[in-house]
Length: 225
Image 1 (spheres, rainbow, N blue to C red):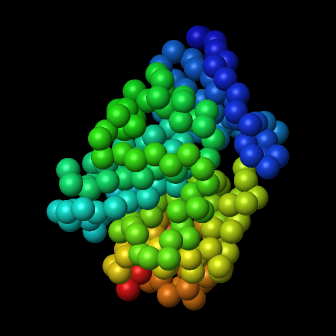
Image 2: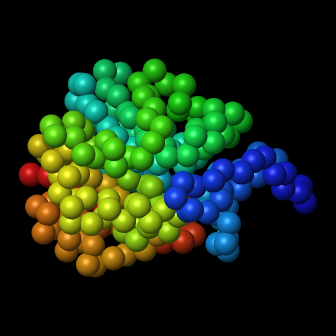
């Protein structure tokens, strides 16, 4: 078996731990220090794609649509969002950790089809929360895969996004009929209630990590009236 080759480390801000980036043949892996198992693997990305497909389904044929992707990861959500919009629309991807952007600009980028090279892609290096506090509706869709779901795993600051205050801010940042889609490692009934109390119309989908198999992940779909 081909051994893993260590390619780099990245420190998560505010003592969030350390990411370790590795390669084995054409396979890439990102692990978090202190956590058993992988955080991301380039061969396991189906639910990340579905996140974008469901979150952007209402944008088909819409000119000048603006999509926000929170968390670059391995680029699969960004790539799927670009496929869902037309040539006159744009996707802004926010990534907190500069090294993750660098890794995606290298050989890792080929796994998702090099979405960072698409002219419709805009990159924001920093906390996605900075873009979720707009005083004016700015986005037609917001896709969030910044952590393990409604409870921050790698970054406690992510908890703001899932709080009442964070959801209200996201609600105002979305344009009318806009869609908020959030990836989660598992279901969370109380979070669905929180979304509804914010004013969203809520639906939850269960999606496999791989088509028809693998871990079951949850996608929260929250539509603004």
